[in-house]
Length: 221
Image (tube, rainbow, N blue to C red; front, side, top):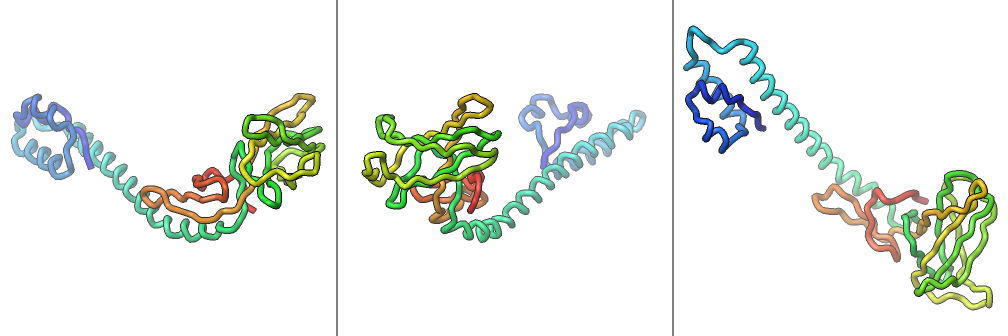
């Protein structure tokens, strides 16, 4: 808890301006001691005006109240951490959507999602190789606005299957006769959860995507 003391108060006490610069902020005990000393040594013919006196106390009370409120919020946030951890543990094994330019293909293919700002007359998903070459694309047809999920079995046009691994995926849509690129989302299960520094931040470890903040999750299924 700190509060600034007006230079006039220090001057009345005979404290030099140089000393004041060394410690601009005072704690509650020092602040009250200075005020008490000032009252004891003030000129009886020029007492400290009530308005100035009350103003200094009000200033200190405001700073003290703000700090106490901040401490209360910190305590409240800390008390929520165990409850948040228990709730987050319920995500293990469930699929979540996370923004990602790459998707993992396994023996069941791949799963992803996108979010449309408005109805699209056509949506196309394209899968690219390591050097950026187009491996395959598929048309999802017209789609309404909102979050839409899709899946692909990983089988190419020649009947061969892409080997398991991570591939770049792009999503394009035609909205109001204009072609736009959409943010792609990976659809993958949560394998575990961890707590960040301080124990208040919750991170989810998603299969094939690593660790992500809980706030990055777009949707849970």
